Amino acid sequence: MSAETGCMVAIDGPAGSGKSTVARAVADRMGYTYIDTGAMYRAVAWKVLRADLEVGRDDEEIGRLAGELSFGFRAVGDGRHLFVDDEDAETAIRTPRVGNLSSPVSAIPQVREHLVAAQRDMARHEPVVMEGRDIGTVVFPSALLKVFLTASAEERARRRYDQLVARGEDVSFEQVLADMRARDERDRNRPIAPLRIADDAIEIDTDPLTINEVVDRVLELLADRLEGYDGTAV
Image 1: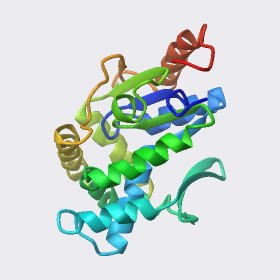
Image 2: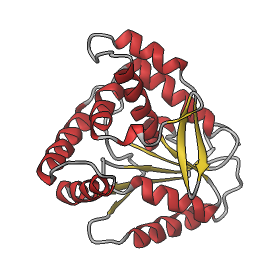
Image 3: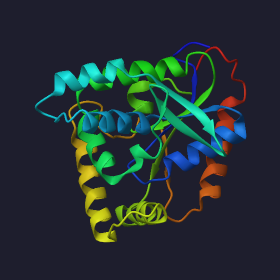
Image 4: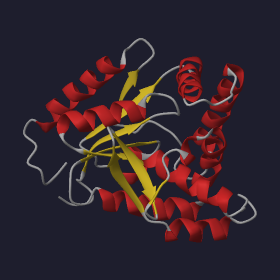
């Protein structure tokens, strides 16, 4: 299976739309590998903070840093964690500070170049479910199935707020909502690989649906696409 056909399912959408949960569930049900590309950009942001670098001032150095990192998703307990240079980064990359920095970091051309290459390489030899913001438009434009998940900013902020509180973060819903709207604005208007729906993607509004309903819908769509698929061309 080539790099262009390795991505069986591309799931895109704004922050908090349920991409990670849905993608992980679909991958589990299908026996595919799940790849969270947003975690990879968060990891670069985490390393930027560690190195005391600044977006806009140190972009060239940040680009070099991104190219030197190694990424791998490994099973830890009942979940899969992102390891960066063999260090479990899962907890560190989920803080609001890292999340807010990951958007401007992801807009640096050299960072995107390195990470897109890494993502394509991950899908070179096995079927994957890959989620992010530009999977169907940039990373794997020939994915067998492209899905774009949406939800209102308020609903997405509520989901993110609940996640942060469950992890013991001291945050307010109002701040999470403001951060969500600011993130949406940056992602939609960045000059490189902005958040948008691929022409052939299927949009699913997750506001009125449970996670299981969304997962079932994606699996139904995938079953339709797999019918007659020979495994060599999309």
